Length: 216
Length: 216
DNA sequence: GAGCCCATCCCGCGCATGCGTGATGGTGGG
DNA sequence: CCCACCATCACGCATGCGCGGGATGGGCTC
Image 1: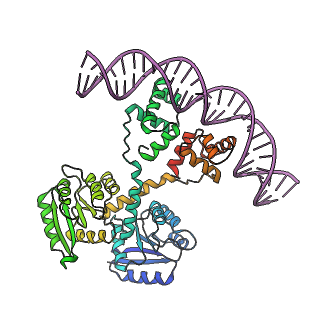
Image 2: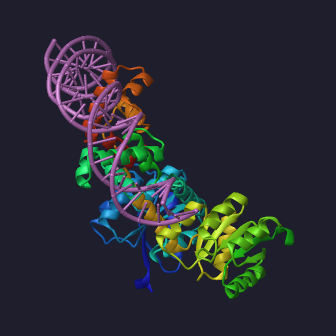
Image 3: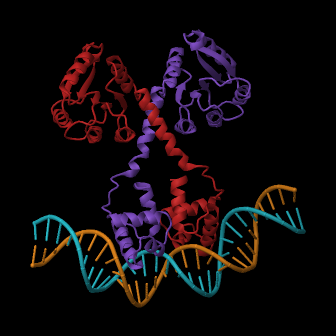
């Protein structure tokens, strides 16, 4: 049974809270919480002496190295370890950064131990445990990213789309003409039609609209 | 107790599965599954005759109106209803679209009834219930969106940033000069410096880089 | 005080761009 | 059969743009 134990590290600067969680987790069936650290630096130092854990519970917003940077470094040095952020913060920026840094989950410190335990198992099973509100936030952020691509369809023809793409890459009309084996004048005409359809009158405007609204 | 019941609709084209889930949910404590529909159209028709439910379980990928469109329409006509997608699909595109359309949760049809029940409660409590793998996918997608903003810092000064922003809006040098109450030449100089820092040599390139990498 | 960065301003050249105003041919629907 | 739409090509003009040169002054560090 001990061999089957899930190894967990907890990085958290509040010693009291750390010990409480560690003890509670250790008593949970199937867990072996063998590392408690007050900072990311300490944890990394330990990483060079002992094998990486399967799961890291990490408090972001602790002294010294930023928890966000810590996630990134852990992802490098112990890619197989699943990192679950355990914090009091629930502002979008922190959540966003943590996820982008590679966190596998995001819990609030107010979570009961059973929830933490469930989250750890979930993370190891390939899941992404999140507090309900956090998950909601993530979805909101996600949805906010999308409307960007509004209707997106301005009725551009194939050629026009091609030319618009080239324009986004910074090509001049002459270059585009050469690249598509067209006359300069043809490209010019297409460009005018694109402007009309996108309701702009400069290439800058067209590129901005193209990037903001749809085709990358 | 009946007054406290959570009202649920289930939109699902497989009649057998629909009835099974409805019956099971209805027997769960605190649920009142009072609508079962084989298509979004049917559900919308019902919406004009009876009050909207608190939660809609929706199968995407059903005949007639696309489930994705259904989400969007539901969000319009019954904004307060929480929509939980219940499907067999777990490809990224479907997930992405569903979330963008405003789904509050995403479950797999393989989920046991207790999980569905928990999800409904979670959704009403402001959460975003998701199957573990789905959540993982969402986070992956999220993380993939981010690297876009790389380091993002090219050491632009305040003025340069200002001018870059105006450029993104499609302003010409002259317009920017007028807007910022500067000389045309000054704007020109700043532009050159921006180009140097962003390693581009056209306004189009600068705008593209600005939009792709950082400030929207 | 020298050196550096930033913000400000100036001139001129050559090329790119936006736009008005044309034309031709092909394809498909009414 | 004609018309709409698309793709193709063409000329000229006014303006905008990129860039190679400048210059001045303010603030900051060494």
